[in-house]
Image 1: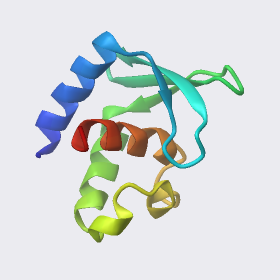
Image 2 (image 1 turned 120 degrees about the vertical axis):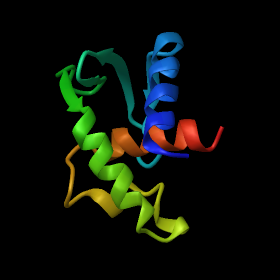
Image 3 (image 1 turned 135 degrees about the horizontal axis):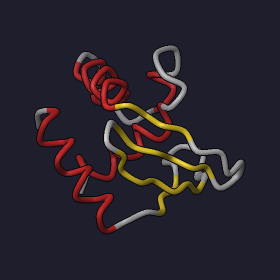
Length: 97
Protein backbone atom coordinates (compact mmCIF):
# COMPACT_ATOMS: atom_id res chain seq x y z
CA UNK A 1 0.00 0.00 0.00
CA UNK A 2 1.39 3.41 -0.84
CA UNK A 3 1.16 6.39 1.50
CA UNK A 4 -1.67 8.16 -0.37
CA UNK A 5 -3.85 5.06 -0.08
CA UNK A 6 -2.99 4.78 3.62
CA UNK A 7 -3.83 8.46 4.19
CA UNK A 8 -7.19 8.11 2.43
CA UNK A 9 -8.02 5.02 4.51
CA UNK A 10 -7.02 6.84 7.69
CA UNK A 11 -9.31 9.70 6.75
CA UNK A 12 -12.18 7.25 6.19
CA UNK A 13 -11.44 5.46 9.46
CA UNK A 14 -11.55 8.69 11.45
CA UNK A 15 -14.94 9.56 9.98
CA UNK A 16 -16.45 6.50 11.65
CA UNK A 17 -14.22 5.85 14.65
CA UNK A 18 -12.78 8.14 17.32
CA UNK A 19 -11.61 5.91 20.16
CA UNK A 20 -8.51 3.77 19.87
CA UNK A 21 -6.08 1.86 22.07
CA UNK A 22 -2.34 1.86 21.46
CA UNK A 23 -1.19 -1.57 20.30
CA UNK A 24 1.84 -1.79 22.56
CA UNK A 25 0.81 -0.42 25.96
CA UNK A 26 -2.97 -0.63 25.56
CA UNK A 27 -3.46 3.08 26.37
CA UNK A 28 -6.80 4.57 25.22
CA UNK A 29 -6.83 7.73 23.13
CA UNK A 30 -9.20 9.72 20.96
CA UNK A 31 -8.32 10.81 17.43
CA UNK A 32 -9.85 13.39 15.09
CA UNK A 33 -8.81 14.58 11.64
CA UNK A 34 -7.62 18.11 11.25
CA UNK A 35 -6.73 20.08 8.15
CA UNK A 36 -3.04 19.20 8.24
CA UNK A 37 -2.95 15.98 10.25
CA UNK A 38 -4.57 14.10 13.09
CA UNK A 39 -5.26 15.39 16.60
CA UNK A 40 -4.83 12.72 19.27
CA UNK A 41 -5.91 13.09 22.87
CA UNK A 42 -4.54 10.51 25.30
CA UNK A 43 -7.19 9.64 27.88
CA UNK A 44 -4.52 9.66 30.60
CA UNK A 45 -3.54 13.33 30.16
CA UNK A 46 -6.38 14.85 28.17
CA UNK A 47 -3.81 17.01 26.35
CA UNK A 48 -4.40 17.29 22.62
CA UNK A 49 -1.47 16.90 20.25
CA UNK A 50 -1.36 17.42 16.54
CA UNK A 51 0.46 14.82 14.47
CA UNK A 52 1.12 16.46 11.13
CA UNK A 53 0.83 14.58 7.88
CA UNK A 54 4.56 15.09 7.35
CA UNK A 55 5.30 13.09 10.50
CA UNK A 56 3.07 10.26 9.29
CA UNK A 57 4.92 10.36 5.96
CA UNK A 58 8.31 10.19 7.67
CA UNK A 59 7.36 7.20 9.82
CA UNK A 60 5.68 5.50 6.86
CA UNK A 61 8.90 5.81 4.83
CA UNK A 62 10.96 4.49 7.72
CA UNK A 63 8.63 1.51 8.04
CA UNK A 64 9.48 0.48 4.48
CA UNK A 65 13.13 -0.05 5.46
CA UNK A 66 12.39 -2.17 8.54
CA UNK A 67 12.05 -5.94 8.76
CA UNK A 68 8.40 -6.96 8.81
CA UNK A 69 8.71 -8.05 12.44
CA UNK A 70 9.60 -4.47 13.46
CA UNK A 71 7.08 -2.44 11.44
CA UNK A 72 4.28 -2.50 14.05
CA UNK A 73 6.52 -1.84 17.06
CA UNK A 74 6.49 1.78 18.27
CA UNK A 75 10.00 1.35 19.69
CA UNK A 76 11.28 1.07 16.12
CA UNK A 77 10.47 4.77 15.60
CA UNK A 78 10.92 6.35 19.02
CA UNK A 79 14.07 8.24 18.07
CA UNK A 80 12.22 9.70 15.06
CA UNK A 81 8.85 10.56 16.61
CA UNK A 82 7.35 11.08 20.04
CA UNK A 83 4.03 10.04 18.51
CA UNK A 84 5.11 6.62 17.29
CA UNK A 85 2.63 4.75 19.53
CA UNK A 86 -0.30 6.53 17.89
CA UNK A 87 1.03 6.34 14.34
CA UNK A 88 1.83 2.63 14.61
CA UNK A 89 -1.64 1.99 16.04
CA UNK A 90 -3.13 3.54 12.89
CA UNK A 91 -0.71 1.52 10.70
CA UNK A 92 -1.85 -1.66 12.41
CA UNK A 93 -5.54 -0.82 12.22
CA UNK A 94 -5.42 0.00 8.51
CA UNK A 95 -2.77 -2.34 7.13
CA UNK A 96 -3.85 -5.40 9.07
CA UNK A 97 -7.59 -5.13 8.50
